[in-house]
Length: 263
Ligand SMILES: [Mg+2]
Image 1: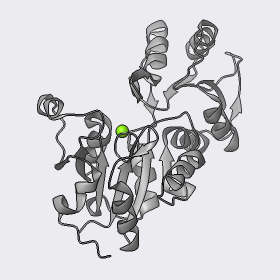
Image 2 (image 1 turned 30 degrees about the vertical axis):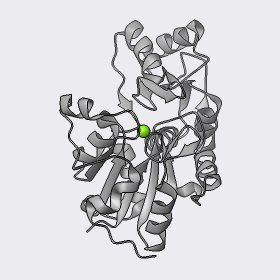
Image 3 (image 1 turned 90 degrees about the vertical axis):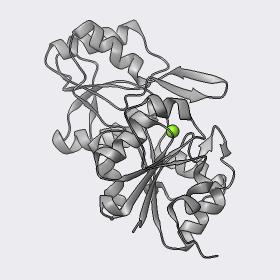
């Protein structure tokens, strides 16, 4: 029996600043019936509180603790395995704040950097690549917040963290060692810890096969692909990653999985 839901945000719950029709009613109904839920985003451009505020303003009251994103998971992972480590960040201010908050130290000195963190950086620059290159050649670990190639925005897509990861891999000849975001195990663990349910009591709903659906499948979590975001039936047919269910959009969930939601 399903007790908890993991929802992706972009393309699943909302598109840009608009909720997908029917999602507010569904989520509020789930809440009233004591189902647990957590929202997962790979996007490292904002803090969890910003996503919680956005959901709340859209009509789905959400505490910060119900949101997990890749920068939060990255910061917590490093602070656990290497407390107080010196990190160099190719990323934006909210990620830097997140890292500082858990006691990690920001450094630009390649001789002293323990971790190079590649992320979504709209201010990426040759000088940053130079520091990352020297630090990694000096033995720093090379990690990244999320593996996404692009990020969907209104009217198209923009380059995401994969561009920065690729640049560093290209010049160092080394592969990124760990990625925090979906489909990583770190992200699944953060979600399940919050839900306090077993994987088999959980459903992962998302619009991307290679992140959302792969992550669920890899962890024994049932999956539902929604067609309201980046995936279509053609892409699904061509992919080796297959979801348990396919939904036109999230509002169709109850009929698909036979979920009883009482008013
Ligand atoms: Mg998505």
